[in-house]
Image (spheres, rainbow, N blue to C red):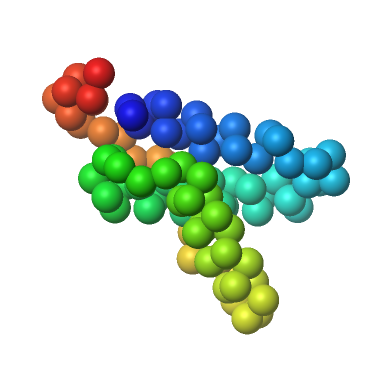
Length: 92
C-alpha cells in the first residue's frame, strides 16, 4: 500500500462516523487520531499493518491521555512526513 493510499484510508476512516462526530471539537480530535495513526504506520517503515488497527490504537491512546487530564502527545500543526522519492517509486 502506498503512503497516499494509507493516508487516504486513515483520513476517510472518520467519514463513516455519525453526524454528531462532525462537531468542530470532534473534528480536531479526528485530526489528532489520524496523525497518530499515521505515525504508527511511519514507525513501521510505511509497510504492513492495518489502517483500521492503527486508527483504533491511536484513538484509544488519545482518549486515555485526555481521560488522565493531559493533552494528546500529537501536535495538530505538525506536517506529515514525506517519503523519499526513491522509496515512493518502489512502492508503486
